[in-house]
Image (cartoon, rainbow, N blue to C red; front, side, top):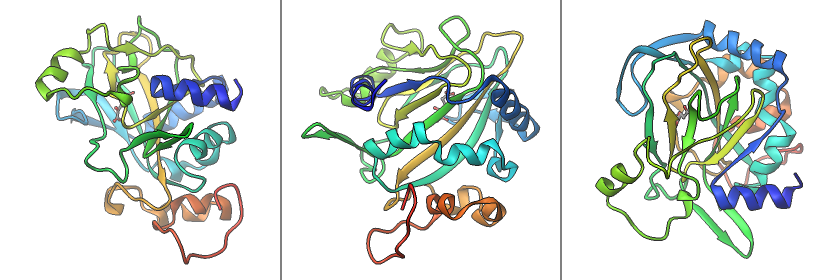
Length: 262
Ligand SMILES: O=C(O)CCC(=O)C(=O)O
């Protein structure tokens, strides 16, 4: 798809599936590395009980290899730069593992009152999005397996709803909620203003292993540095160009730098 079509689709739905970003072999390598770093969770990210049927993996950039290549994958970064900013920060990288029988993850969203990171505005045909997530799909997913799910178009809602109305309307089995179909190796790119979550994983053969890269404008920081992987643990693996994704937030007065994210 040409960039104009990608941006139109992203604006219409709040997410985009970019196919064939990773090969099948790369998916296998990434899955293994995430599994090695798995720590079992008692609760999911929303505090719902998962009793060890879900895992989370941190410290992935220290693995090097494909994890580093994904920091600035050209097919993904060119879309992020068109919707967030020409200068990006990579805030957070983590993996999630959903075993067969792990419960769904309720629909949730980046709260708009945190305007600096969680906004979505279109002006004069230009998208201005805050934090966006790239979710790498490491096994096929569709409505039969479960997986990443969302309420398409909800990032642009015009009519305010109460939280209890939302809980009712955005229940995981609601017709408004769609499990996104994507092949292994795809990148699902979505704005944090999109209501999203995950439907229960139903593939008995393979756990669902997914990999998230969360990007923000270089001028913003949403997640406290102590809660992210520490740059000193993987800085020695980074090229000068990739290091630009991990600097402190700034707008003017910084060093003159060149490169894709300079
Ligand atoms: O499992 C998914 O694809 C969604 C995960 C999610 O919403 C999150 O990590 O905030």
